[in-house]
Amino acid sequence: MPGRLNGSRLAEILTRESAAFASRTAGSAALLETARGVMPDGVPMAWMAGLYRHRPIFVAEGFGSCFRDVDGNTYLDFNHADLSNTIGHGENAVTRRIARQAARGMQFLLPTEDAIAVSQLLRNRVGLPMWQYTLSASAANTEVIRIARAFTGRQKIVLFEGKYHGHIEPTMAEGGAPGANADAAPDGMGISARATADTVNVPFNDIPALARALQDGDVALILTEPALTNCSLVLPEPGFLEEAYRLAKAAGALFALDETHSWQFAYGGLIRAHGLSADFVTLGKGLGSGMPLGAYGMTAELGGFVERHRDVDVAQVRGLAIGGTTYGSAITLAAAHAVLEDILTEAAYTRVAVLGSRLADGIERIITTHGLPWRAFRYGPRSGFCLAPELPRNLDEALPSLDQAFSDARRVFMANRGIWEAIASAGPQVSFVHTEADIDRYLEVAEDFIAAVSAD
Ligand code: PMP
Image (tube, rainbow, N blue to C red; front, side, top):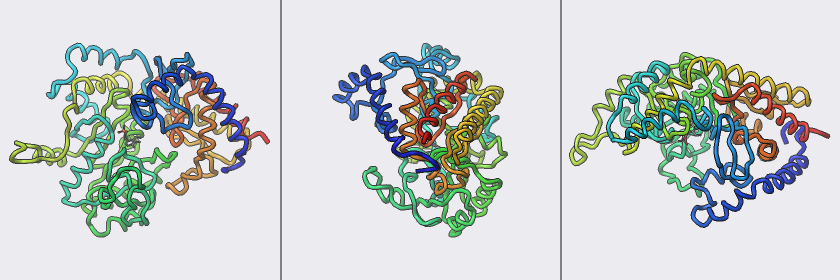
């Protein structure tokens, strides 16, 4: 058990709070019974049942930073659908723009002017000049990998241990010796071992391991988040991403930053905040903020490559395997236009960073008050309990900073007190609609939980 966590106390809390949660969510339980007859686990998407130890609840409605379940319980949301809706629930500038566009047509398989506006806004914020759209970050990463392979004429991709880039085949392999080909994805995932045969995983913040992975000159792409956000929070050491980019260039490989999550951390993403370089940046989740949307920016050279490699006539010239019937639709780009123009403004990021510091300071205060040898994660709006004395620099160090029993007990304890806690490996995070009072309420309940688990 990490520093001074009392295992039997955690188990007791989990049992007691789970029973209370079950009795408060009887309406959801009844719906789940019916839902099980038509959907595996009673949910329309498997993760909804797999993310938490408690059963899923059915949502009735959302408003601002809160949502209410069918039993009338209200939750202050610190998960934001795993950052896929960071602008809050209910009516706002985005839903109004969506309604206007919906009434004028949602999908034509032709461009609308919003596509130009969104691409110009992204170019100005991220710095990459050319943009394409998908329906998810996973699909954006898929297309980036395909373009990189076609462009370089190479197959191998290099990823960092602790990564997550979506449920896409080449990125699902774990492990492998540093710089060697990754192990096959675990059995039972439905992923062919051949699909991951060209994937290499190296430790984050490890330049020698990265250099070794690149030494044969056969790598198409290095794909990484600028800070790993899916195994707690692992920040890049100064110079790491700059050197990784330089090594990629020297080895004739392309370099992609997946800013699906980190786009929410700083205006224009970490590429802008840290003045980084990349050939691609992928986005998703909060860019649509409830509307399914992924995007990737690329250099002018890569944009030109895409132009020269499109389908001419599928019977004659097959272009890159990119695109989908519903990608880049009028409705998704109308939503993104409003998200960027009306909500994710520079001033809004500044406000949210201040609230993020309030959250991280509060978590640090709780840790100190209870004499725990832990740290607070912090980057802009993102915080969390790091259950280790040092902040992690790679996956091996990140694993002990998390604890499943701690997360499970905390989640249900917080839910019973009206806080929808972030998923185990990510957050809590401040959203664009949170207020100081929301942060303070989170901290109050979190402190009660820490007091309950750390009491002797
Ligand atoms: N990239 C990163 C960094 C992510 O965290 C995720 C999802 N957690 C994805 C890509 C995939 O996003 P989606 O499931 O919306 O396609």
